[in-house]
Length: 116
Image (tube, rainbow, N blue to C red):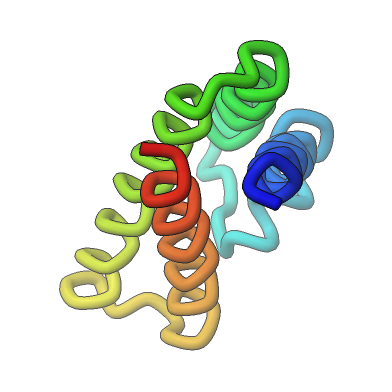
């Protein structure tokens, strides 16, 4: 069962990343981000929101070791921590930001605790 959930988490990560990689305008809109006189934001979406997640998810599937999945969990834990700080300090739209936090925290918890 752990293997199946790990693979699903990696595939979900790849799916999240695919949106940023292949559809940066859509992803920027979904995240309430907009370019400000430059298309550099789309480059950042393809790299950090897209390619990074696709690469991390693919690495987990290729390596297949529990430690690889745990590392992905630590990455999600970092994202969840940043999101929590943002919720407290930046006051983003609560429902959307909290939903993203909950997804990141749940993936972090599963991937770290099931694989260490």
